[in-house]
Image 1 (cartoon, rainbow, N blue to C red):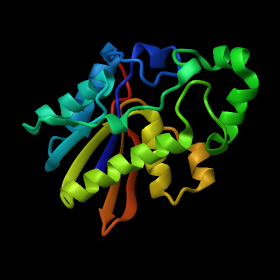
Image 2 (image 1 turned 45 degrees about the vertical axis):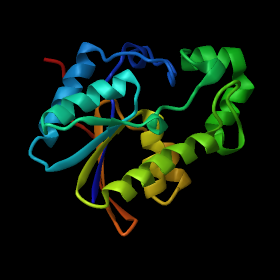
Image 3 (image 1 turned 180 degrees about the horizontal axis):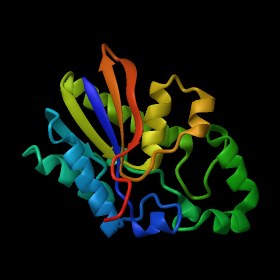
Length: 202
């Protein structure tokens, strides 16, 4: 089977470089165009199912893809972004000023540090990967779209690249991007990484 891994389109808070997890925000006009471009990019592919985080920005992106294939989206709360707790809605510099030591410990080694009042990285990683493997178990073959967020896509692609720390530190999925992984007998092969389908404003 092929997994088409999509990060949702741009939001106003992404544009402001804010850390958002559980905040439920819609796409910007550019985000909508990114979703439409993804729909066009995948329109000739035979898509079996479309799964999405249940948050609005992911659902709106997924709906654009699913509608082109006459499919309903399957919402999965396990595909949500990490809960940023006390850092939710703050920019990098705001978090750095508020909680410098904890923030840099988490950036350097999220597996062994924590977000104040937020979700621990190990719990986040486990729920995301459990959700993905449940989808693989249920679908078994064909092409499946999974629409999620920056953090989950980073976790999934990092896992499919052997949990290589160098890959993990260097990779960040762009808004509206597409990555593709072929999975045969639970063995992954990365076919495409972080294609930015929509690259300019009209």
